[in-house]
Every structure is written in C-alpha cells, then in structure tokens.
Image 1 (cartoon, rainbow, N blue to C red):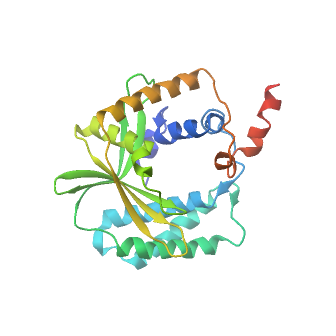
Image 2: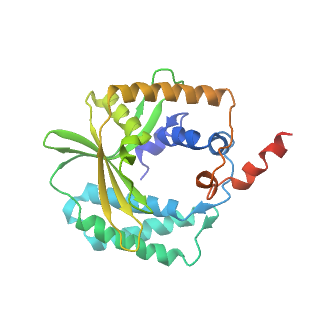
Image 3: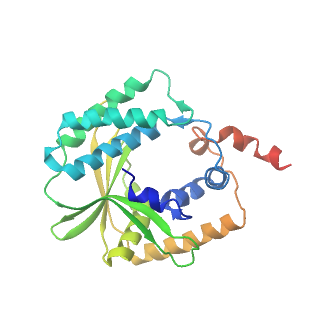
Amino acid sequence: MEREIETIREKPHWSYSAFNTFLACPMRYYFRYIEHAEVERTSISIPFGRAFHAVLSERAMKGADYTIEDAKEEFDFFFRGETEVSENLTYKPDEDYWFWEQRGCDMLDVALAEWPDDYTVKSVAEAFSIDVPGLSKPLVGEFDLVTVDGGDETICDWKTASMKWPNGKADRDLQATVFCYAYRQLHGRMPMFRFDVFTKTKNPAHHQFYTLRTNDDFDRFVYLAGKIEKAVNSGIFLPVESCMNCAECAYGSRCKAAHRRAA
C-alpha cells in the first residue's frame, strides 16, 4: 500500500533532507536533486535504517499485541526488500547481510522491551505539506509518530546511529526545527520533539532526547530556507571537502571529476 508521503513527493517540493543535504555539501545536493545522478555506492546503513523504521511504525500502529516474533519476521521481510532495490550496496570489511540481519533483531529486542505504552498515539506516519514564506515550493515531510502524554503533544522521530548522540545534538538539530514548524502551521499548537535513538553497537541501546523550539528558531529557519532556495536558483553548488562528507559519499568520483567536466 502506497504511503501518503509518496504521493505528495511526486510534485516539486522542499524537504528537511534537501535542506540538510545542501547545508552539508551543495555539490552533493546538485548530484542528488538536480542531476539525479546514479549513486556510486549505498551504505548498508541506509536500507537497514529504513527496514528498522518500518518495523517501529508497525509496532506503533498495532500496539502491544505486536510481538517481538512479529517484529523480527517483518524486519527480515523489509530488510531483504530494501537491500534488493539499493543501488551498488556496500558493506564494511567483516560485515555482510546476515551480520546486519542479526544486529537488527538485537536492536528490536531492546526497542520493544522498552516501548512506552503510557501515552495516546495521535498519528503514525502522518504526512504534511505546508507553504513557507518566500519559498516557491511547499515543504513536505512525515512525522514518524505523534503522541499525547498528559496533554502534551510530542513528535517522535526514530533514528539508528553508530553511537550514542552527544549532549546538545538534539537542541541543534535542524529536523526538530523543521518538523515543529510544520506541526504548528498545521495544528496551531507548539509541540515537543523527541528523538528515539537506537545504537547499532554490539550491545544495542535506546536513548531518548527531548527538545523544544521557539518562534525565533522558526524565523531563523524561514530565513535559512529562503537563502538555500536563492542559492539553488543561482546555480551555486560548491563541494564541501571533508572526511565527514566525502568518506561514504554516493557521488565521490563524480564530484572529483566535476572541475574537468566543467572545463
């Protein structure tokens, strides 16, 4: 069954991912969103994260009757499907499909054992499309989970990570700003935001990070979004060369040859 967000994305739009990609490396943004270039490599972490995310969505929708056996069976189904459609899939040395299959099951043991059922689920996979002042295209996205706990509405976003997040990361994260902005535009209320981070370590762990945003954060986002669109429309796509950006970039070879193609 097609998700609502997939239909919304068929039309021109902005997204948190597009903004974040541009800020990390405008050249990567160009290859992905303008040129739609074939990816040279896809880290196994991408299909793994999508499959893990899909299982958590099932748990949120089906409630406490959704067992760990159900979760692991569906993870196997989702993970296999995601890897089969991934272009140029890559693994690190000493890792393979079965390594990550087992790691996913270990992480699900933690996720379901610590799953909180003491709140009301307001929505799961709620798609949104809103207008942002100064942008020529709507901003679209999807809230993983929205809950109501003691009257407080909270957007929950699921992440898989190689290690525990450092203190303060959630308070600086652009996604929380973008999603809280969208939620207020849609519902007229200021939500809380929570990242549920599941580590892909040998002994998986689950950490929750709550954060809030202010009207000034929203004003800065609108300002930033406008600057990004202006830069894109001006054709400004410089590479940001760093070990963090380049190590697993899906367009590494293409980027290194960009100056020769432009000559």
